[in-house]
Image (tube, rainbow, N blue to C red; front, side):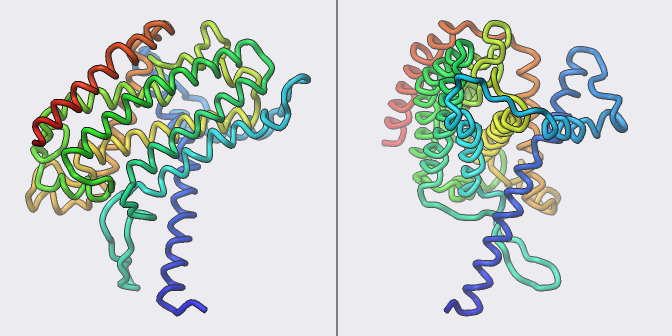
Length: 344
């Protein structure tokens, strides 16, 4: 039998897990509206306007449409893998958040109990995130293979090559931060950046801006976002790996993409931009709770990724491979060497 204190801790962890899952699962709804509004303003148009004030209820209408839409499975598709693929793509995107901290401990009013703003402080947190995050690619590959479609198969093959190419550079960018902070824990990485903007890794590390640029470019490719959305490529592959998907199965792929964008934004803030620490160390800035600083930075990077989508053109496939193998990987290897020499 569990004692009372242990039972309370277990209940708190379960509640935090359900709350985090609910928040993450609902995030794509406001993000789709925001992205369409960003696209509208960049294109000098209004974006969604008809459903609710300024189209604020458009995500609810889209969700209802996807729920009611017919779920079509091609006749010659591998039915088991076809149905399993969206779940394989979606579940790892959620599991990443097990090791991501959103702040230090907070005190719950009335009950006067401290609760941590994370599920688990893993001492190998960054390795866990990279390992689990890389599993989502199997959903894309299985979806492309199981659809029995040329376009879907090409999208899946592109995604496999893209993942191999840019996962290496992404891992090297994380290694650079680990070498200088001497920790694999994401919580300890944030704590090491306390004291103001000059302590953030993007400026504090000897070649911090280089590591940041490598990380952002590789992360864009891992998210399959423009200018690296070659697995979808509506212009030539008719949506690529999810061409044959409809209804809620299609929405699972989109859900995984938006959650991946949020997780990359969170990782960028944690590793390079001080996490929940304010830009200046003073009474005025410390008065604002850390979670608000954290969310403000994350929202800024989400907007940045949306802005890139409607600003940059799509690369050709050979250009994608060239950037990965001939530029990012050699640059990351040289950066590891430089960081190691500086560490000595």
